[in-house]
Length: 254
Image 1: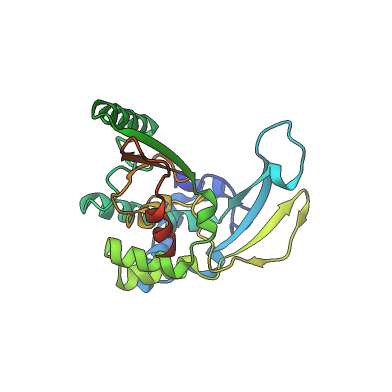
Image 2: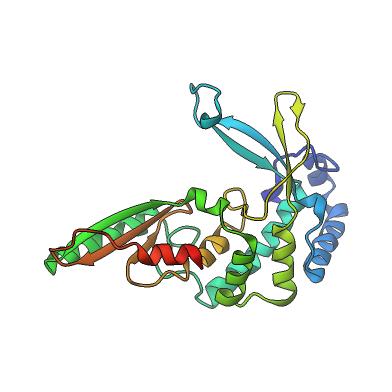
């Protein structure tokens, strides 16, 4: 329940009241979430988000480019996400399905482990008198362009998620909607298109990220530091003039 501590106006009752009555409500909440999982269905009203635009940092002008959207969902939606996340994460760890050098969202890994690996690779390259080219790719916008069919296909082929579990993910991704809260105003419902993936505000960042990058080949040594940055270290001869990003370009089309 700690994952749903923030109150959302879409909640049927305030979260503090839910916590006070938890012993009574927990069997009902558990039944609702288990029914969602058993039927491979994520209820429509759990998918509606209230989006509040906030300044990226204090002191900026209140213009569009300086705002970032913060989504708020019903507490039961967050609980259902958390329940599936725990099972999916355990599945990825148990079957060693995370990309080898992913440092984000893994216990025992961090930005420090990513930087240590990059630093070590550069030193080894220098010892072998090789040229090292470091390419930093910011892919934060990529998650707004990945269609749901691609995500579901990768979850099935890369992670072995199928049957009711895959149906649940399909239901979770489809027909999402949102309203924008600005001051005392509330916009009409806007339906999210089929290409947007709820990564940044979702518990599923780890498996979505891993499913997207698992297919990248070893032509470049991949270091994933966060969901927004991918580091490629390409070792080549002294005559190299251009960085080959063909593997990345092919991956985008898969």
